[in-house]
Length: 390
Image 1 (cartoon, rainbow, N blue to C red):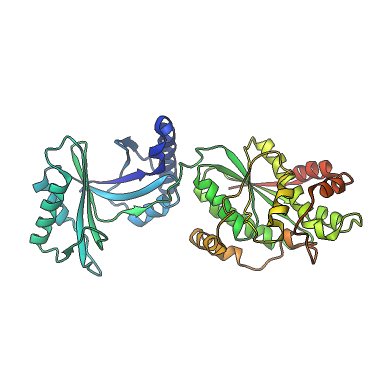
Image 2: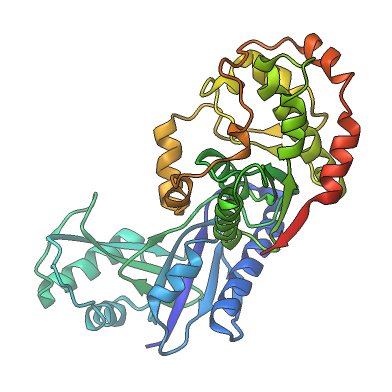
């Protein structure tokens, strides 16, 4: 039988007057990703709140799942058979194409969503099809809530689409449907998850990584690039800036006029300024960080206030209130956790004081910065940075 992929969106449906924009972005993303994967042309059309993709005769479901599971904006999707809207014909088609079970489920239900123009109600079709499957020997008990197996039917445009499994998508907003943001990324656990969360909201994320080479080895740089390569599968045209930061840190650390305990806050303020300069260059609308309220010394309320003051553009911190275990779960799901937990010496831990300041005073910081070549450091860092494309 002919097969069609049906994709449903979630939050996009709440956009009202702007819905068409998000739907078209989602259509384009699905089409581009499928064509990149399979090197063939796909027809991706929109009808009645659904996106439909005609499937080839010998398609491999798992290969499509690998593509669709990384597309934001997708609520769920299913690989359907194209059948009849006449219940008597449809119930036989459903039975004839019933999948082979390795472990037969104990409970089932029939779920029908129909067009209003059909002469019967959804509940009537569910009962009739369910009865037919029982009479035909499905050998499962009916369970309307939480069944182990569902025969799913959608009736619209004079066609009955039926399937036996619904895959859950990423949700969120269509890829690249919002403005650019610049994310300060490391090889740690938090910043990759923060970047992912903002990408899920439709932002196109440009990455900035501060490395300590040659004062550190290149492990952290390589790990960060590997993480960004993984994240690039969730958006298009990914760009990463590699900014040398070790020399600046050393200069601050060896400056006798800079109290050791405030080094970390100064490093962070400077990183934000450099990232902001890149954001202006890229016409991005804000910065993304993996800050989590109270997690480490630089993330006390006082220190975050002092650090954020260095930026004149919005800062987005999607992890701000999450429990660390919640962040780890997302990182494990993404696959970045396995990289992030590898040992390496990063720029953040270089030239760190033994007892960092927990309540930095912004006026003291400004006074110290007056005697530092901040603007020159920002300009030279951006100029000497390397750009990597994914």
